[in-house]
Amino acid sequence: MSASCPRPILMRSLLCLVPLGGAWSEYALAEEAGRQLEEIVVTAQKREESLQNLSLAVSAFTAQILDAKGITNATELARSTPSMVLLPQNSGNTAFAVQMRGVSQADSVITADSPVGLYVDGVLVSKISGTLIDFIEPERIEVLRGPQGTLYGRNSTGGAVNIISKKPAEEFGLKAQAGFGNYSSQKYKVSLDTGAAPLGAGDVSARFSLYSLTQDGFGEDLTTGDDLDSRDRQAGLVALRWRLDESFTLDYAYDRSNVREAPPIAQLHTDGSGYLGSYVTSEREDKLALSYSLPSETPVPLGIGRSDTDVESFGHTLTADWQLGSMGGASNLAIKSITGYREVDDNEPTDFDGTPIRWADFDIYQTLETFQQEFQFTGSMADERVNFVSGIFYYTEEADAVLPGVFGFGTVRNTPSFETDNEAFALYGQVDWTPQILDDRLTLTAGARYNQETKRLLDATTVVDQPVGAGNGLVLAYVDSVSEDYDNVSPTFTVAYDLSEDISTYLRWSKGYKSGGFNGRGSTNEQLRTPFDDEELSATELGLKSFLFDRRLQLNEAAYLSD
Image 1 (cartoon, rainbow, N blue to C red):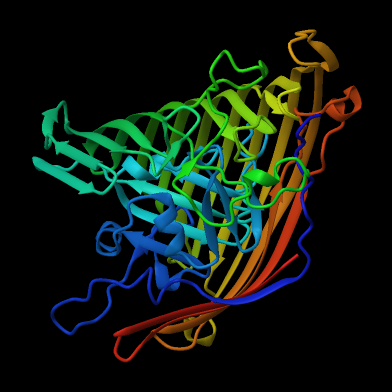
Image 2: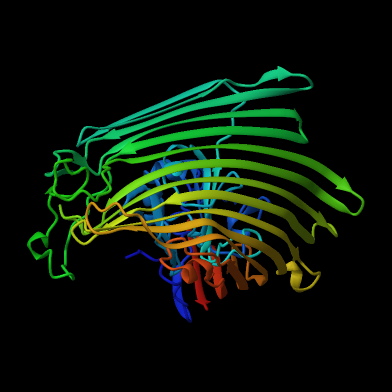
């Protein structure tokens, strides 16, 4: 009588040979003179590096590449990225099931951590939300494949997606875009740069962006006559930059988005119950009878009674970047502070059975507040033969959820509700060393991250109403408070060798970690109190990166083994 989270599947020895994405997602707009491919600079290891010198499987998309390929949302990004799959949830197009290199998470419940970390300007977005990619105007998107246990360690066993947004320009500028399509689709995007104005010893600049997307539904609910799978999204972004001098920059950004649209079409393809065979549809139809918002006079009173996806989110980000230069025996020293706060209010109804019968209907009412503080330290030593990055990471999240589900012709309504209060702390460091041997072609990398997390489940209650109309509210399970601690050390080691100026190879071994937690949907006290285990993923990767034919062809490949 309750929907439970499936236990993670242990992935054993997944071997695959795939392109890193260089041949298509990293194609650069060739220079007119010489027609050579451009170098792309990334910050995948929290310091600026050439993509081709990075001993890691990364697909990098600059703003020019995104425009040229027409990538405007999360789904299109995944289609252009090897080994990455991103699909909307049944309940709405704002949450995604994400898979990278076979590691996946398909549940949008608030207690489910994604194995692929999404970072916007360094701030972790713990639940995959596709609307962020829709309206944030990126300067660059970096997709890191494989476990990112050292530098992006919080649950990033599959990989990480870094979105680096465009910062306010020093010159005045206005950019407006409009798009129109079938189903009355209308899309507008406007951004305004004020340019730099003097402030104290430095200058300040600002960027304002607005985004709107509306579209009629792709289908019709014959029960109510309402649209299904529509789009109605608005978002705004304000970014401020204060440059005190060449060494210190302070960036602040506030973003807000609102989504109020009809959920996607669910369609019954196979009847396993033996009761819904007359509603089985083998081909896609644009008119379906579903159970959203059934009229009140229906003889079946138990239902979710909602037909709109309603998601509101906002976030604040404050980033301080201080370039210290040289000090003692070190050079290129820099300190960066990243502070982020995000809040999401998520309401998503779902007709899972795809019929007008209340056989398997669910709703989600959940809120999430997250806070992050991270300090990063980078620099070089020994005439830049040694490069290092280290940091301190702190993260908290508080959430509450009510997850009603209706089953069996509306005869049973099962309603789990719970709160979570989670906390994470990490220390990390990584060092690259180029020894004075082999003509400086060899680079050795070692790093490690210590993670410590506490997961708490609070006020967890599962209530069942049965039979129809009884409203008895029988409490199946209740747990006042339960917690579990998790800790882990995730190392990484890499050996890289330059075969020539334009061809390099590397062998990388890394470990990723995903903490355990609690299943708030449990229907007994034992299920609520029993935590599920944490996960570890270790991967060995052999990679090749190359420019060929006088830098007219870029070919990057990787073979990996994940356990």
